[in-house]
Image (cartoon, rainbow, N blue to C red; front, top):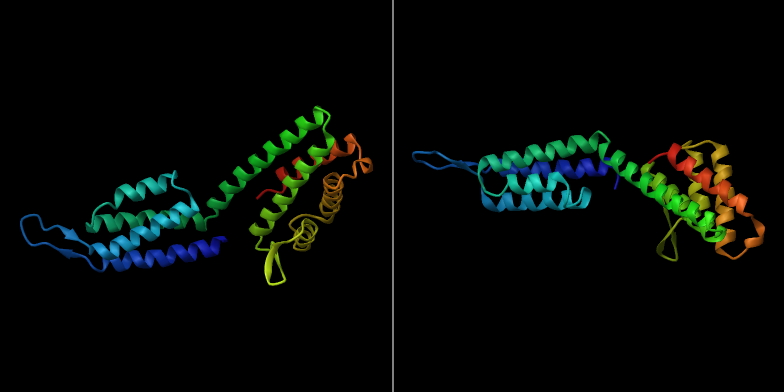
Length: 224
């Protein structure tokens, strides 16, 4: 789901929130407390918490804040919920959600590249090549998602992951990176495939070192 889809969903839930506010009523008496109807508020609350959990996770401050600020059916609880959701909308629309996710993904990929380097140092060039190539393929897939490019193809009525070479071509076609990068990626993917299929004699340890170093530079430079 891209930014526009997420913003659209937030707007739909915000509409629910304003509908909840429209049910406001007040008690007569000394304190004149304003309430909203509990059933619409419960629906709004469930929709927001589900969205936050799927988008940010249960451990995010938004989840805790919304939970604690909307426990009752006071008018102020509905207003608090809407305010929190508007803050979420602003963050998503500003691109901060995917910026943070991209940083986390890049750090994770870098960790796997470090593991590949350790394998190389220990003399295991073949698993190092497979691991580095897998990191590269996943990075290409995430880049395609970021740039709204298809990552699946239909085959015999089923959706199957698009091959890495196709992802590479699609990304280069829309100028996510230059043709030189595309050619390097093609060579790295070819080395990975040779390693995965037991063609160990077609490349050397030095080739894998250059591959690992090149992939690390690429995912650092062409970020999510």
